[in-house]
Length: 420
Ligand SMILES: [Zn+2]
Image (cartoon, rainbow, N blue to C red; front, side, top):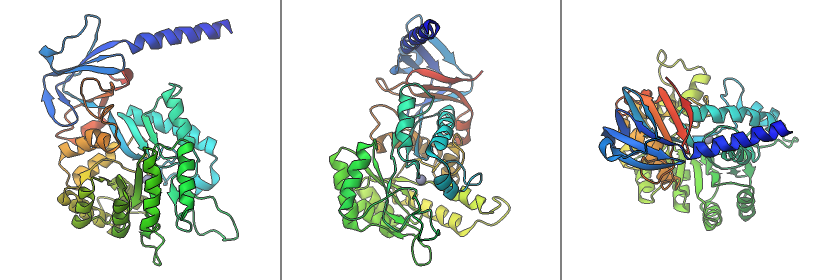
């Protein structure tokens, strides 16, 4: 016991010393969330950025630790806008099996590794869009990360998410069986109770499936009426939280936007007109291109050798229309469908589909920060913000894949990864 106690005290001392450690970070270039600067330094003290600017103007205390990498770029900690830490790739275990046959505790054990991989890839913040049948395990995961029990990104979590009765999966089982769903079903006035219950259990925002593939021919069709969405938003907003909507079809996007959604997830059928409507209502678009790409590969598409399947062709076309509409484009890949830690895949595809590289960098830093109301904490290299820093080799403002060449990851002023 005495040994345990002394270990505890030594650990506490180390943590408090660490919290006051100063660092001067330099790189060939600094991306501050909006633009590239050469010859900059960033001074960190404790968990904060104290100053950032031209090297000669950043005055460091004599005991500050100096970290510099040659041929490197320093960026704000990256922000994943659409993750599912409680899921893992469907080519390993299909979604139905994960939802129906895996216990929440098993899934949470896996999620601790997913969280670590996310952080080590430079994503120091993630917005998690639903546990898909694992209850409020995301709330517990967030707590364990915040308490320093396990390494992981700063999390915003949805909890169970809301679907309309009859729309969501797992599907196709004997209707005599009560099959558990990947989200919580509610309709009409009952939505008031369910939104409040989810908030009470720890949801940082309310995630709603505004449509689902439950049309007569399996096409995406709205699942809630405009009035139902407005009701969800009213209750959500009055608690100071945001409603965010899964919506692929034009009609569902339109209803979600008019009801007050702050972000639209997927929007596979977005066009210039719908993009403009989103822009007019200050709604951020989270494209999840990687999910479409990877699910089609899991279904047998040999990328690069076979022609693109219809869903991929459509996703490319609609993403180009979204760019043309001028809607704000954030970053979120639906990671979990593909491996956690491979988050940069979404950014590579955004660029491949026509987004300028610098806009992709902004999407996963400043734009996501603003979209999730985190701009006073993260997403920028700016005095007073949290010391969430990534240094990579190369220049991701020229080649987005350089974001994979992670040399240093710092979150809240603590170094979690440091390569030679
Ligand atoms: Zn998702």
